[in-house]
Length: 88
Image (tube, rainbow, N blue to C red):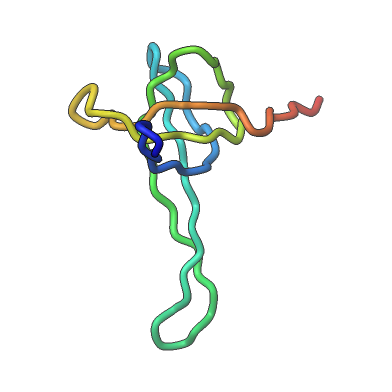
């Protein structure tokens, strides 16, 4: 039996890195509309703590749940899935 529990994780895009040791991550999910049954996109922003990795704006990251660090910060960036590409 494993002693380490499985933590909740989400995948989203970094939209702001202006704070110290914190990034703003936009997570998108698709739901089915209750009446029309069309796929609808829903967005939510999460504040995530940056410990070891340093993501940039536009990076796709994986965030995992941690115990609360502040009033709104309950997530931590665990890995960078895809780095953003700046054109021009």
